[in-house]
Image (tube, rainbow, N blue to C red; front, side, top):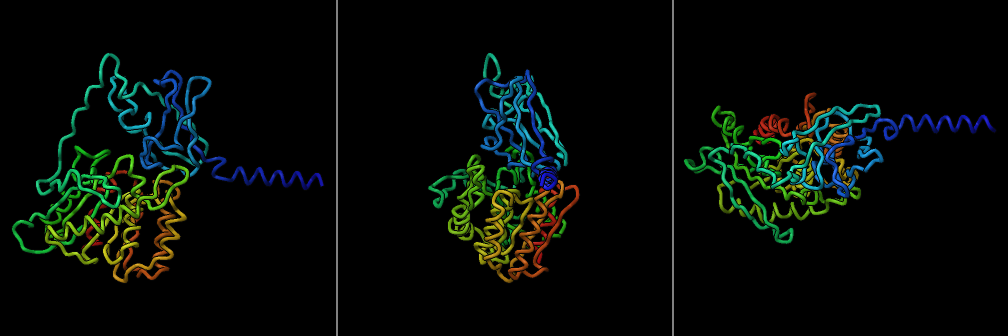
Length: 395
């Protein structure tokens, strides 16, 4: 009997040791002597939690030696970028001159790791006066990009207001043609370096270059909707993430696109409003909500671009939704993510693709790209936009 108990205990230890939650976690630690303010919470925001500066599950715990630390979930692996905040981007970490620091970067492996960093200051804590303003970034939007509205009303979300960007093809004013329309989320990051958080997609530059080279003879109208900042996670998922206590308004957000914004665009601009010429595209949480929009309204959005999707946010709900929806016969889906974005991103993306195929999507109507160097970053989505656009809209 005793030997059986010993074998059972050994097997329990072995299972625990093999479990990712037991051995693959990374601890982020702010060293003693850093600018830790007594009584104030310190958060970590990064590519692993969609850059939420106040994510409830990502608060560092004070330590007896004056440090503070957080052990990240075991699923956080691969190349990651992150930064510390005190609950908002206005209270982010800074250097000794009280200027915002670049993102920290690290490759999280498959063994327990502790990453210790110093925080010299916070951007809002300059002694003797307010923090000097950061030098403004130059505006880079092309001349054929304009602000459609600084405060477009979202009636499906209680009347919230949002900035909407509009790109018109180079020949729009000189032709009488009608154009396909592409809807993009996170509008701050689409056209203009001055408004982008971590770099722009440069969609206007890519489309202008394709038009100039004759590789995009039809052209395209692009409508980019700013995210709602602290409301971004709520609006970009129809399902609530119980750990983060965020999400749940994605259905209303998509209803806004279909029932309010798209009718306005089709009424005021020369568009081709059918699903074969209406696309939706986004990255991370924007990838999740784009997939949802394409399946909730398959007769509206016939072309769907899903970049580095944050399916982790509501994985079971996403799969359940895909498995009970049937794509329109002519719908096309383009998936792209890098394997270095974490151990779950590409496999979960593949599960969604396979579920779409099982629901009748033709294999020729789905593209699935996993570049080895792909990262959860704007530069990657900027590079991949052109191939995705040409595949989705060029057929």
